[in-house]
Length: 99
Image 1 (cartoon, helix red, strand yellow):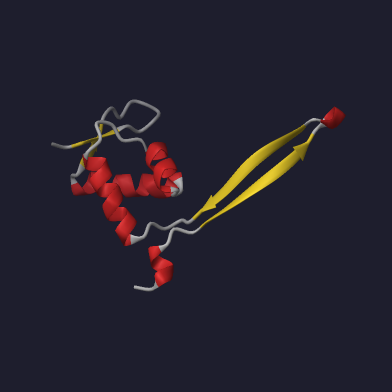
Image 2 (tube, rainbow, N blue to C red):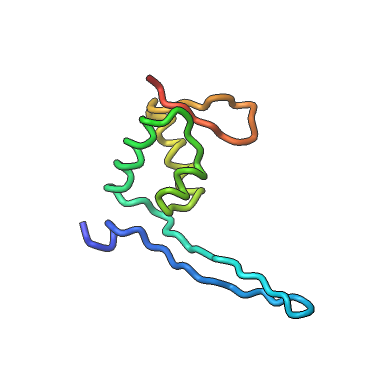
C-alpha cells in the first residue's frame, strides 16, 4: 500500500461573502476525500459496534469523511449483517448494531 492510500485527503478553505452595508459572512468550506482508507475503515467498524445508534453524519464529522461515502459504507455493513436499520419509515437512516 502506498502512503497516499493511508491518508485521508481534505482541503479546508474559508470564503468571505460580502453583503450590503459592510456586513460580511465567513463560510468554512471543507473538501473531503471520497474514499476511506482500510485502516480508518477498521477503526470506524470498531466504533460502530460500540455505539447504541449510528448516524452517517456523526461518523462523517468524527472521521472527516464525506457523508455519501459513509452512507455507502453503512449500507455495505447492513448487507454483511453487522448493523440493521432501526426504522425504515423515517426520513433519516438510523442504524443499530446487531448484538
